Length: 430
Ligand code: ADP
Image (cartoon, rainbow, N blue to C red; front, side, top):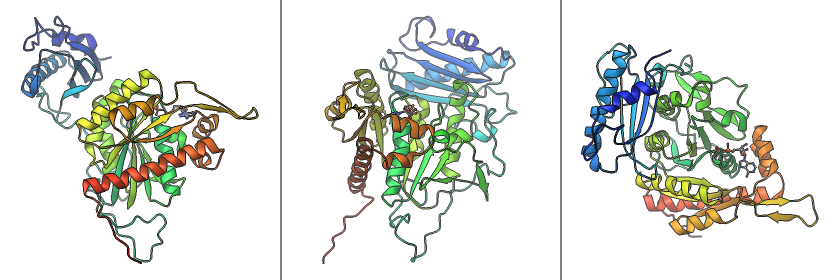
């Protein structure tokens, strides 16, 4: 086992000073969180005295140098280092990354932001045979003029930065377990049922859900001509980070390799032409969802929240993260909004978590509200069985809520496209 542990990491930070702080970072209680595993290290600093990029950069440079030196002295080369500066609410203010540019170099790592080691080179990454390490972005062929309208996207400029992908939409949440993945999967399937060409990218490195929710577990990831081929399931094209990372690896480990794996999924998947690419982000506002949200030119983001006050507070932070990145928020979905007991006549509705809480939060922040989804045993069962289509063919409250969510999202995307100048209004005279 490596001797470059969390304690060694903290030890390295002891001598690092910050402007306006008494003593080193540990003495000044500026280290909120530190973790190290297999040469990958992550540090979260809260230094209220520090302001401005220059100060953050100077502290992270010193910290990176001290950490790299410590690791080297212990015989463990520093593979990757992530330093985050957060405010009192945990919002990330500044991020610095460092790491060995290649496996042979023994130099101390500079703190200047650098790309994380490529996913292919990272230990714990599941290599997929045949996948090119740096495939140029696929130039998706235009469909022939005779292609039927259903599943063929209407020709329009790509606004996502990915060739052929018209709208990239991130689904985020302030915390895990609120139903973010369930919403992402059902949005994708619902949009496909409206005749759109849809892709789903499961990028939740901390808990990939697509293998279960879309029943991909038994399927092999196919690589053709150096590109990942998405699974064609339930009328959508799906790909999951769950097939690129080892789920048994600890979370600290998966974080540093997330960027490389995510880039591979977005850029090296043969998406073809899509109207919508729905991206299931990891929960929270840490470096991983933040960097992923920055990787693509997003049309916008959807925030999933349960009604309770504690969930709303986290959702507000997620909303701020997107706003700080200049990503338009297309709407808030209130999940587990209410419960309908339909085994009694007439059916009775129970307000379990405080129905309307997330809707009020959306109003307060001036954000569109997309839908309230009831807590429904059928949704849980269909998710566990990998059959999202059944949600759109079952009982009314869930089916109608999902249809409303899909329709409202389509409307918000159309409005956002007009605002962002990617669609011109058309006038039809008959
Ligand atoms: P997250 O992505 O936010 O961590 P998931 O989408 O994985 O959350 O949902 C967590 C669990 O809750 C899953 O088993 C999912 O099927 C279930 N679930 C989510 N939303 C609902 C709902 N409205 N009704 C019933 N079960 C739900």
